[in-house]
Length: 303
Length: 335
Image (tube, rainbow over all chains, first blue to last red; front, top):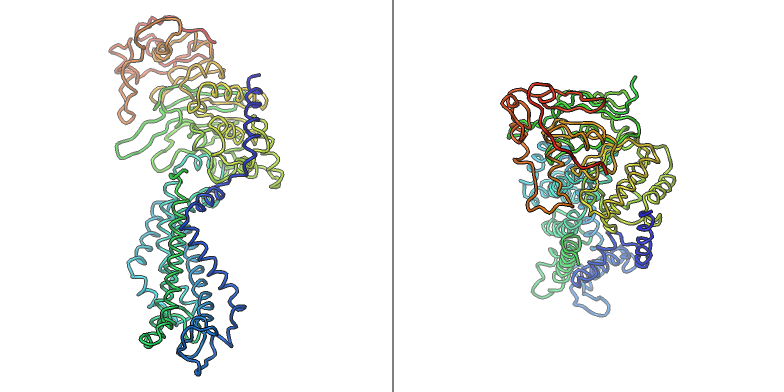
């Protein structure tokens, strides 16, 4: 029978294909990302920062090194003992920067994570159901978008008090609308595709279709925006701490370290410069990674 | 209680758009017994896909609406079922295959997961049992079992369509609606897929509605035929009725437009004119502007369905005795 013959031919092709590893979409995307030198550089930097944040306590003990003042050693330049020098209270800048990474990353990742989940849920509901629900949700998002995010953050922190949690809340709330928009736009383009109609034809419920079929296909722009969002959140954290509305001293945070060193800029430039460099390098690395992810995830660039 | 699996009675479906009301399906009737295959034939825009979506109750609701009619599946009117009940029916008792295999599969799920999904939705089995069943279905459609972990982009068009067939038959439905399943495939693959569908149809005793515009496919797969034009069924019957005793001028035109391999002609023989604008259908008989045998009355009076002999029905004033019967010459034999 003709079908048996065709199956045999395909069997042979399958055998040769089996030699290459299972090629899931994510493996394909990782392969594309690896080709991008800049993106891998960014990824390497971020990995180093994450690792130092995770192992911060092993690098420098919090109470004795990071917070404890040591006025005898204040404002010393980089040396063998203090790799990046000391600040105005005699504290080791390197140790403070490593612990500061913890704060920045924590706020960045959690703020973006919460914004993605809330914004993503709102956006997918708005996009899938359309009509009045879509209108109501997106107009509320527009209201939040109309308020400048820094002002919104300042308002929230002034009302609720400066703390890590309130900072995360402030940054989250101002990012929710952009994730809602991104996810809604993805959902709108995916829900008209034939495999969604096919999913309806097998009797899948709306919830199942959104969670198992639509959202996994809309991840690409969210991942890209999320990476860049972490960069933005870190910058906002630094900015708010700089003006005193973020992390309170003596807790180390890059922005407040930057602010604290301002008055000594002329003769102890290292106090401000090193935290500033840390902020800059982290943002740069995240941007490079985000750009690389955007290229790797673009289905049109088939290499 | 009839022995019919599916009975469509006077089904009318409209789409309300900004440009006017689209009369997609206008009062059609047909029925199907268990294990039978009906070919629903017509040009693009005739209303075939809308009919299929209507049976599944998947007509997109903002613009589309079922205006009237009954869709009796095993005696129950599907139009009156709740959405929850319909979800239990879709994929389970009635399945549908869509036109383009390239876009009918979710690109980020493995084919095994997609076959297992329909099994998990309707049958009370564990995840691993569903996975095993998915592997079996894959083997059944001629794809090696180990490929169950592969993604759709790793398959060719014909193999994707086989995966889709596996998904549609996984829960052993009583009725399969296939919307132009081979249109997007090349002829050799088309032959393989049709053979597969025939084989599985015999094995599972599945009734099938095969939507197509290809009369060759109909001859190969179907027991009965219904010819659709502008949302109406203008002629229906079994293969012999349609292929050898063609009665409606439109059906005759369709056969006449197929090029003959034995003759050497210079021009093809299409039916003159175009499918009418569904927001502005012709009065009287909807085919009259293109019919070579049209007469004055055809513009005024819409024909009703005449039964020529058991099972062979046609909608033309000529068979109602109201105008002179057209002289239709013979057709190709049923192959």
